[in-house]
Amino acid sequence: MERELRLMKGNEAVAEAAIRAGVDGYFGYPITPQSEILEYLMEANPVETTGMIVLQAESEIAAINMVYGGAGCGKKVMTTSSSPGISLKQEGITYMAGAELPCLIVNVVRGGPGLGTIQPAQSDYFQAVKGGGHGDYHLIVLAPASVQEMADFVDLGFELAFKYRNPVMMLSDGAIGQMMEKVWLSPHKERSKTAPKWATTGKPPTRERNIITSLELDSDNQEKFNQKLLDKYNVIRENEVRFEEFQCDDAEYLFVAYGTSARICQKSVQIARSEGIKVGLLRAITLFPFPSKRISELADKVKLILSVEMSAGQMVEDVLLSVNGKIPVFHYGKMGGVVPTPDEVVTFLKSKIIGG
Figure (tube, rainbow, N blue to C red):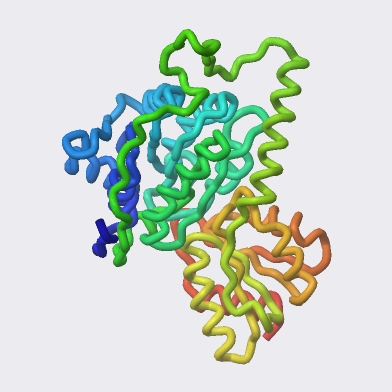
């Protein structure tokens, strides 16, 4: 079957991509601005076509624990939510990281803290990238900037999750989740009929039993396991960094952004260059692993870096670490669900930094 072109919301694209990716189970709970994912899957009823289970759990906490159970059996399982709902899932997420279970978690971010607003934001960066639950762990974090990537990152997310036995988070926002764009949908994949060797699917006489747990009462053994995780994260850092550059070859100034902010900055680059200001853009596609090495290299070529985020300033801390004092690093952001305009970004660059 060939790819199919449709006009879809970002949330709808995630749902359709999940069906086509051969996902075994989706467990979720409604919350704005991501409820269309659950609604689309319920209406599609893929259990009748692919056998995919779609279940609205009684709570976000129940949903993530259902994901834990399905992942423990080696199944391709996922959940989606928005900021307060992801906070409720944090206990289950750290358990899955500690048990080395693959899954896909989609966060269509809204403004906070607390219940906040239902408008788009990027203020969950720390929670996603630094490990929002307890203990030393990382999620692999993908940041889509289009409806197309909302679809594409479903399959990519599962590929990385099973490759590294690690939860993957797609960190989107309410703008991309709600906007409509054309999207090319991949052909249907069949659901896997075989389970990974580590999955708890019953003990045959040919092997020892598989145990899925994040509990280890011996401190020395726990430290060895923590080191194993750190070694895995270093391999991920080495092999899975993804980013996109826009007019960086001759840039004297650099925007660093992701998601919706990167879309805005792409227009800001065009506006600034029309006024003779040579600006480039590095769009982070993976937030963990972060493109630190490339940002450090660009810091040797540009005069300053501006981190543009829909938050009070979170990713800017990773930019600062990447630059390591070579050049000035500044932050420009909007909060509470307010989306910056391209002109506002350029005005900030000119008046606050360049002094134009």
